[in-house]
Length: 213
Image 1 (tube, rainbow, N blue to C red):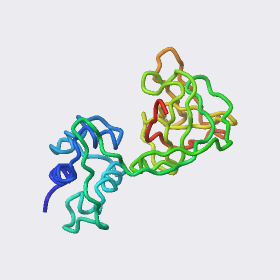
Image 2: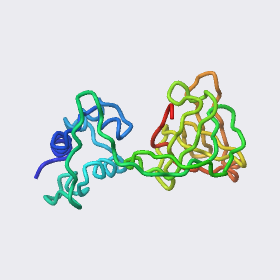
Image 3: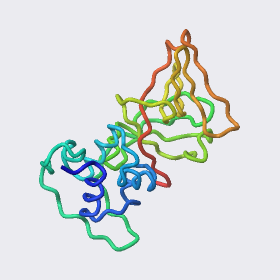
């Protein structure tokens, strides 16, 4: 039975998807896809789920544990000219308020509308970002897709509420405190000690970004 590395490479080629296109769908680097396909690196569970959804295959098949490939019939791969990416499946999710990428601002919870994002992101909602503390990765005005009820590893970007305010930062969980670390070195980290965490709520993980809409 094939292993994950050979399965993902074969599926990608059969679907007519380049490494760059798959990386874009998963919001990871092309080099990471290359490492997946050579077996030098393995994805986490959430990434495996997203890959299985993109290729519409059973998770056990993707991981080389089953010969049963498809959960349901797969539509023919889109034919696109060289240099263009096929349109991925899309979900419509709420656009909720704004979130600070600088000093925390009062979060606006009113629904502002809906936006379409790739289904592979499995987003719960999107937030419009304000400020420059996450530059150069996240710009002022970017829409960031957030997935709730998901495990967040140290260093990943999370939407975090502190009282009535919210912010988007790299999250680091320690034994007796949390650190919300900006990417822009001109900003200081936000630290909350264990005794100060009563009003702290982790709203979800950033799973995708839309710019220039």
